[in-house]
Image 1: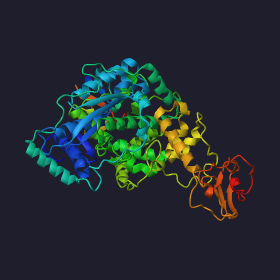
Image 2: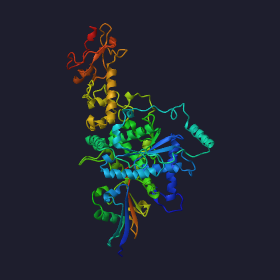
Image 3: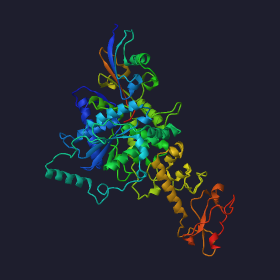
Image 4: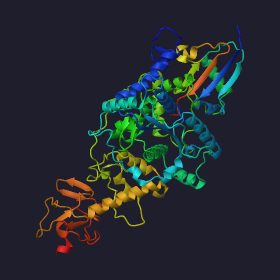
Length: 511
Length: 101
């Protein structure tokens, strides 16, 4: 054992026992090292800590408290706030139980002295559609014109010396969102019912878990945006990250593993999500919380329907934890393999290249030209009539799978539908504008007017030519490059029928 | 020789949900010829304390993966895990790590 003095209290790795004192040092050091190595939290920055009441996020709060305390040799230098999302509605809690959980969490959050925000999952029904768009990246952090991390720290220290080092400028008292002394109240029953409708309409436990994670993340990021926090800290542990890696791989999110599990997640633009607990195993966290009395609040898991199959999340958890019993390096191996993944350098991606739900860059280009989704029909959006199929092109591969398992459109939160509709309309209106130069693709030339089959039809490329799907053929509009503002002819005029492709008739308005 | 022993069991991290939400249990284990090691203790818990869904707490002879066991505030891995022989007044703590955080 490291110090060779005190009694061993726990085993971290095989053959590596720690006493309490050495364990505490090790634990605290890891947090500072994680922030120090990554250098993304700038001094004086407002950082929102997402607290679930669970062991990992509670340990994270304690580390922040330790780090900010004046006695610490190398004090952390940011301004923390706390946010708690109350999810009792979907965790099978009665209103009384929810009140109890809220009261316990309020006590826990107040005791820290940091400003805190208690929000309900029901508030996701009131999110603005803008949450599904990345915000503008702030100039101060990652852009080359802003100060580097070292410059920022140096200037902060200098400023502190000039000010007489009054310590981090934390607001004196815990400032809750609700007026002081008010008992936290639950949302009204109608909202809870509407929220539950979304969850109950989900066909699988997997889709339900993904929906919960999505709503929770959007709520937290929106809170950060509203209250001026540039960073959000999430308490995902090493164990949780390893499970998430394999789960997300199974969900079809292989392209996004780095953002989903890495230390930084910048998909939201102006708000950066960081995961400072990702180097701590669940065991380390549980022992730390026990030895050093970190308060936690346990809540029941997300509800499941009777006789429903387990979610992919639960299956992977069981698999990894089970394997870990006999092969104690399983989880750390998965984790360290994941560490080798780094996010793609950010491309200037417009919103049309980002998934509607997860905000990651779409990984489905090229599929529309192939016959992978032959049943997709490119419909003209009719006012008042929505179809789930129209959303599919807006989503990445895995969100498509989840989306198909969620309920009908009217069970989805309003902000998703509003933003979805907006993008669908935008896409449609873009396709109706003539493109220049004309993409002739070897078609006949009728007096300078070249009909253009639009690229988003479905069919198969063969040596004989391009064979559109029978169904898709009826929807291929064509119009002439010279048309300008003219209305394209209705795609329903004329009968192209089934069968191999032949050049479309000349543009009727040019005849 | 036959000894009866008094023990405290604690359940944390959600494990208490399997025991009617009661976190602390103080019990006297009955005299028996077999030694009171953790292995036998778990069998006893299954028979006498687990109200429902034993598979959420136990797997085979041992606890379910994801549940930590502390004997007198120390990792059971340091004490021999299932083979540890219980002493009088020992505290055994079960912490579930299965509900994330």
